[in-house]
Image (cartoon, rainbow, N blue to C red; front, side, top):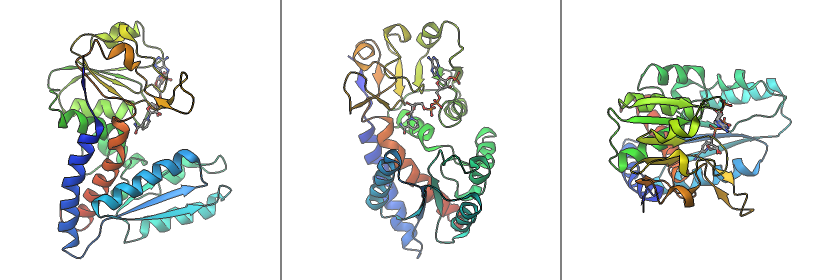
Amino acid sequence: MAERLAGKAVADAMKEELSQKVAAIKAKGITPKLGIIRVGARPDDLFYEGGAKKTCDSVGMAYQVFEYPADIDQAAFEQAVTAVGANKEINGILMFAPLPKQLDEKKIRNLIPVEKDVDCMTIGSAAKVYTDDPTGFPPCTPTACMDILKFYNIPLKGKKAVVLGRSQVVGKPVAMLLLREHATVTICHSRTDNLPAVCAEADVLIAAVGRAKMVKANYVKPGQIVIDVGINEDPANPGKYCGDVDYAEVEPIVGKITPVPGGVGSVTTVVLCKQTIQACEMQNGLA
Ligand code: NAP
């Protein structure tokens, strides 16, 4: 039976540490603040926003939601994002994507100042992540994967890590972060030959594929560490969600595994706060 790498233990330890950091920053007369930019009111965005607000409250940080109508036009939204970016009270910005079709998302993302880009929306942040510049923030989910591996003392140096998925938001950046920790990294995608066999060679497998329960027994090996990033509607249980890994099939084989729910997702909003606090420290010469 595998060890369950629960996200809650990681999130609780991080929140404890962040609360102390926030208290120390507040003692200097500064309150770290997250700005949340939302267009429309998609249920997924509202759900994530609710979690982010709760986490901000729990560590003593401030937040402000900047909400815009779903039919906002390009010029008005560019102006709005520029104003949030220039707002001196805001240290970190989360902007929900994808944006509605009438908006030029690529252009708008890059209006976020890189020093406030705590979820890696801009090319400037991506450049920093890919050049190992520690002043650039990776997206929150890959950082959450790394924080889980660190919390559970999972060695990465010299180990074979396989990342299943090559998106800009998870697969590619998590591969960069694993490389930073001296893992030997393979990135797989929909055109990878012999996918199960490639995954089964990993010491650490990160599944970020967006396909419910795709990772089966033939993708894993005994002793393997499995980090399941997936959030999918569970076809077997409508209204519930599940990961990219078939937990029931894989868990009896591997060494350690994150559950879904209760794994990576529980750490992501804490990372959002952590990166906003780091941004606040850097902007105020406290880092
Ligand atoms: P995405 O942009 O759709 O990318 C999925 C990747 O998986 C692509 O690189 C795709 O390959 C690959 N893929 C798809 N089907 C495949 C198959 N049959 N075999 C091999 N590779 C396949 O998804 P994402 O945004 O990275 O998200 C991945 C998962 O993580 C989703 O379930 C999402 O909900 C979840 N997620 C979770 C969090 C969190 O906080 N826990 C945050 C973000 C995302 P190609 O490039 O070849 O098309």
